[in-house]
Image 1 (cartoon, rainbow, N blue to C red):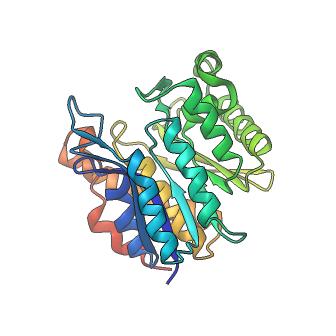
Image 2: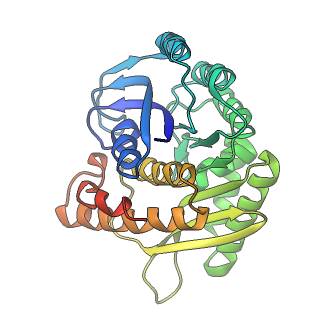
Length: 289
């Protein structure tokens, strides 16, 4: 069975990070091997949370995996609490990354034009370096702009993009995707969760796949607001599907269909956006080829 090392935090509540990745990757027929970066009572979107930082314990886990000659087919990195944890990832790659290993990096730094509390310029620079070693990166639009321009540049570019509408806006996002793949020499960049409006039509959520100098949009009708863990679920479907040899297009379409149903049920249920989406009853669909 193929294996993916999933380097991310474990949040007891919020349906994100490892609690999202493990069931998705597993049901798709790939073994998820978690390496926790932190253990949290609940994800950080809630008003309070308990945090146990695992930075100093990651080395011990890696040493045990080395003893067992661990050889993952894929490595998927998510939420990282600071630049020190990115350095741990580089050490992990030195040990376990091989010629045919897929490295997918989800560059978690912000959303909707705002940075998260963990953001620093140093963390952004480290994630640029990590992205440069990846085959696939999955930033949202905010994170894509941070990778390209930093915090001040992102603020300026976000303001410029917010003034654009329709196809003009989509073209500008496509230019961002092209700039990402060129700057970091990745096989593909997927810019996730892009809100798109056209006059007289329902708001759509778009995911831009930039691969082999071609851009493709995958849209679904937007429901509700921004939910915890949707980016983690999307990246998890991509990582498992790519390791199994599916095309990027098929993986992205599968992820969008899965999330659309999970988000619909979350809206129907009317829960807190921090609680995440209702994905569990649709996991079986991911097992279908």
